[in-house]
Image 1 (cartoon, rainbow, N blue to C red):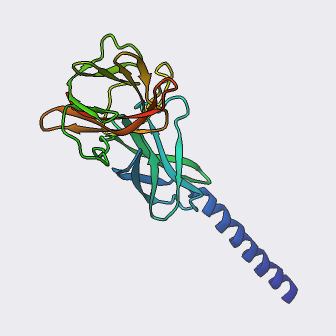
Image 2: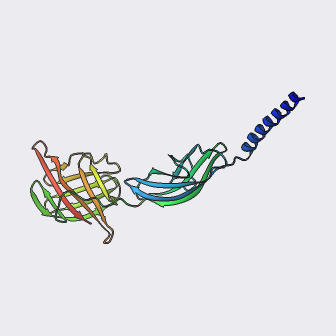
Length: 254
């Protein structure tokens, strides 16, 4: 009889364990997650902040952010993983001036749940400050300084998609950009037919035509109050067809 009672008690315990385990599995649901905010973080990035509202009764195995330029998040948009509970955050790569759609996600054994969507346009970077002080609308070519008239031409540029011309009395300086220049530091490329985003090619025409050497810096700052663009370059080197190296500086507002 005692043995029978022990078997009954053991069976009850095992049944309770199994029942409890099954009950736990039955009540697991998708987690609930919220996208709290998206804010500018710095050069080509934003910071996303999310929160696990509910784990769904199970451990969270992954959380993070999804982002896309398409509000429908088509074509497998990129994801950025994050850590933390219940609050989590991550730095997300994003391009200036581009509008993105962001949402947070969280995963447990039941599956992946998604948050609300935040639409966010990445603001322009801070104006680039040139390391030289120059008089506006002037060019200094190999020690000779003269005034220039500055104008832009986006309709029929010679190279690239946007051209800024510094027109002097006996010399022209052309700056060819891949697209409309924004705040930032651009890198020179010698071959104007090989311009990409973030690059600029600067050509000089007087009695001869030259191009400044690659790998140098040009500084662009937007004056949003007066709706003007300021382009500055400091002592850019170029080769004078075997006659040595010359240096070009300039500042222009258009």
